[in-house]
Length: 268
Image: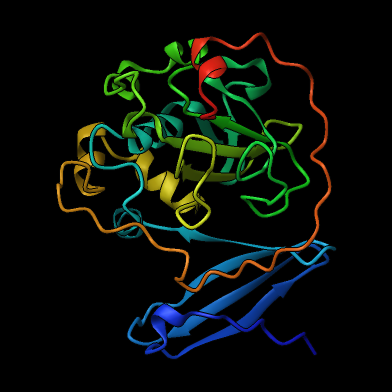
């Protein structure tokens, strides 16, 4: 018999009746299916549980409606939707039974990819993403010189100021054979911290949908040109975060000397 699902404290949504049903578990992760009213759609939530008791939850976006409702990467001058489109169309290939393979090795640093230590901020041990046995790599910082190899449509809205034009990031975990294991999108909530509540896993099915769209069609369906944007989710929205101790992140190979923006800003 499986362990009972954890209790969710959600003071901001006490009017909702919500239950969590365990559907998969292992030594590191447990997946639950959340059901309740008024929503009629079951939503799968993946929790990461480490040996010190920390849980990390990310919602998975499976279709264009869910992407639009998340409000990720919009409105202009944010670049997250354009970054996601570039990744789906140009950075990955789909083969071998719908497996995703990276066309470029993120370890080489092309397009601004660099190692991501899975922390919410530089000096914080709290994880942003669920545990993975594979390394994470981040892309999307338009202040890095290597980001100039990104398409112009991704970079054109960057004001080079401290504003919303450089707040979005895409993170992948990748296997040694270049198979892309997981794809996440996230955003900065300030100059040094990522927003764990507005961090999402992008499903393979959504990436396949994006690959069949033109850029203009994708941006229109994702609501990029809509001025009325849903308010970002707040930390009270059924978020489970049981903090415990944590280990120091693994050491990584030294990076090249930082450029101007990296020396003067802590934004990643």
